[in-house]
Every structure is written in C-alpha cells, then in structure tokens.
Image (cartoon, rainbow, N blue to C red; front, top):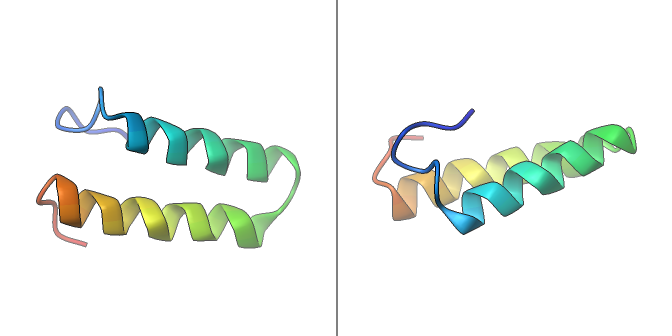
Length: 50
C-alpha cells in the first residue's frame, strides 16, 4: 500500500505495522481502523485524495 511519496514516512510505517499486527491477531476491526487512519493521514500529510 506504500506509494513513493510516503515510503519513508514514519507515521505511514507505524500504521502499516499496526495493521499487520491486528491482522495477525485476527482483529479485523482494529485492522480496519488502521486503514482508515492511514487514508486520513495520506490525505492530510501527503496530499493524496481519499
């Protein structure tokens, strides 16, 4: 899910790691929350459209 604009972004990496952990724990609700937060972050900080 990384694009070239956020490959080095610490917050993007943290949200990706949190989503991966949630999926390993089979916590799909938390994984979904992480994806939503990442999309919001991408829009706010990287100028990507949601």
